[in-house]
Length: 324
Image (cartoon, rainbow, N blue to C red):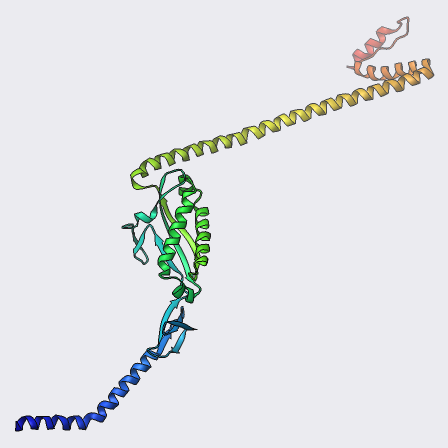
């Protein structure tokens, strides 16, 4: 008993000695805890949303900030960072050479087209958070809601088009239509999200029919090639033939115009001669005779002109022979 009493008195003396020190230590610990829970840092790509007892109070900008400990809660929201959601595949190892997998994504990528064919559609939705309050408090699980909206919109747009449009020429239009539809629904549901871009990564037929579809697609491409070649030949031959036909028509029209003009000129000339002939028949007749002889005689070569009796012909012929 005496030994036990001695131990208790010794413990009480040690406690009395260090009681003030323990009090200061506990006070310092509480102050440090309050200070640590009051100070917080907001990154350059983020904004902070403060709630007090669960009610929205304020929004804080990047930098060092303070809040009331315990009663206030901080939510950090990346508003300057572009985020993305993947559909039909997942990025397993992002980096310089990323690796992807389709495990567990077939249900969201396999879609029925408007002509009752199947297409395996992979796409990405890129977005930014523009309203942190709506993103945090207006909708429960906004990312899940965004994924549901994106998948429903893609299925609706793909379901209105044929498989050939989905796989080939209609991809840009599909991406644009899905982009607009997702944005309308995000605004309607107050998600606080702005859709930056919808990208169709890869669109293929399902694996069981991929070989058959590739054969059909190759045949269609060959058909288009032959049609383009035929159109090329058509564009070479038909315009040339049309040009030749037009040239022939123009030459014929020119020839007809020339003949008509010549005929009109000859008719006018004949009428002019006739009017002069009526005025002085003998004079006109002699003038025409002389003009005609003036045109004809130079074309005859050597000429011999004699009188009616025909005298002195041989000397003249001899002179011509000597002159050769």
